[in-house]
Length: 211
Image (cartoon, rainbow, N blue to C red; front, side, top):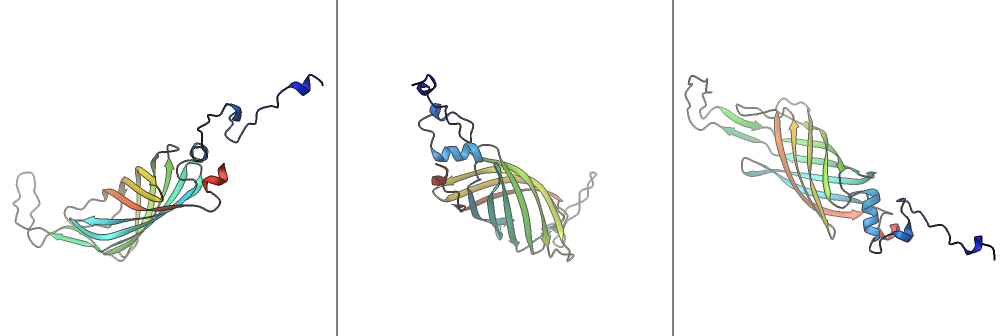
């Protein structure tokens, strides 16, 4: 027997670049997926949330989020319906030295027409096993009061939780569009979304396939 026959075989280097002989015993397949591919890589999801305006539910948001766009990326597709709002002033106000606007029961304070909205939200997830994300948003609103398409642009961030097939997705963002009109309307607005839905592993991406 030669000296070379007595040597141990070289350690196997896995796709993570780690020595499997030194790998921690509690390093399971799901943690391997998180470390190598990120929070949303293996799954897709459907989510739903209401649209609330002036204290009432005025519409609904439906989202489909697709993983496997990149190791840390996903794309969130959004389709929304909004029933419209219209709020008038309730009482007279006088003009003072600071130029206060006169409002009465015929003055439109806040208004937005009934419309549909389609948006794309690319997301980058910072951590492997914790759903913190940030990303830009682009989209369009159709059928506004002037019968034209309104572009939308913004940025949002949030936190997603996965648990036994259920997904809770919370986000807050700043957006620019020109859908509203009235005395108190602003082109730049803040939007909060609280979505709930379910997720499933995309084909070929079950945990067992990574063991």
